[in-house]
Length: 355
Ligand code: NAD
Image 1 (tube, rainbow, N blue to C red):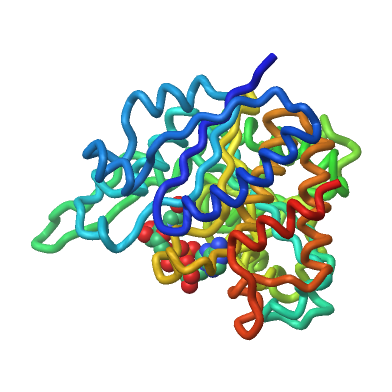
Image 2 (cartoon, rainbow, N blue to C red; image 1 turned 135 degrees about the horizontal axis):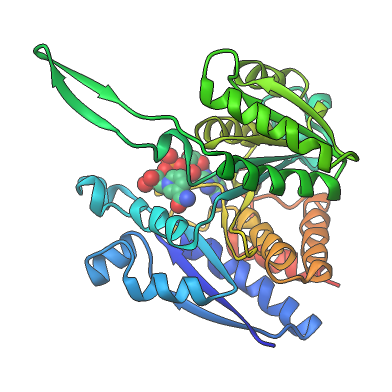
């Protein structure tokens, strides 16, 4: 049965890395005779310019009926002055909410040949392979009530940190099952010594561990986790955490790898329908210069094939081609400012390594 992919290139370097990744996907489709159909739509600033809104209802509907969504990046200085509700990022949030993408998977892997690019000593990161699973649709970013109110002549800002048992269980299930397919180690990160909501988180995750006896579960406070990530990151396999802690820790983990241009991500719902995007933004500082590293977007395509389209072999072929290209010494400007190849050349180099 033909599966449908909705491609939303977005703004800045989004269309550049999307074009590169789709060239790779096209070659893999031919190689494996994959029954995939691609459709293209606007999101973010591009959609604001054309339709007056960061995402239209019709695009949201198409996303909901697609098997997977591929997204480049949104945003840029052109739209920075718009009110919060009309900004490009709202397109992304609307997609996450509409598709109920509660599980965000962000791998941080360091290919040995790129260990030098990390700000940590290369022996600490060479061969690193950790996966952060962040709850994406709950927690303090969405809790009500929220706002700024006047009280006794001054303004008070407030947000609510809330998780239900159902929300915790469904993200923990993804984490346990993912750990089972990897090195069977799961570290749940919370702040159970201070916050009641994360004490509940710890209790629920701990209780679920009885169903996954093959997975070694540990718990860590978020401040310690931040420290351990730079002290000895290879101790981690799968890290499970809530929305805000995951936001911070996954960016920290991204930096261990040297360049944000290498990191893919997946956001999944209960049906394994997913949105796949690089971790980076629209990089307006380099847009249009052929300097964008397309590997995060290409690796996002590989994640899509693996998690939403059940095409593990095609996914592995892309990953291997990326690593062979890196082993061959080719670099985009983010990884080597003295000797670099363009976005387009990198895509071609990866295609040449597909076997
Ligand atoms: P950014 O990730 O766009 O850029 C940060 C730095 O990393 C820049 O120096 C950029 O040149 C570099 N960089 C990023 N991706 C790269 C790549 N593939 N290859 C080479 N270098 C790369 O973050 P920012 O500068 O904070 O944000 C720029 C815009 O992107 C803002 O409008 C922001 O709101 C938006 N943004 C969007 C997303 C998204 O679409 N998911 C995520 C983050 C930021």
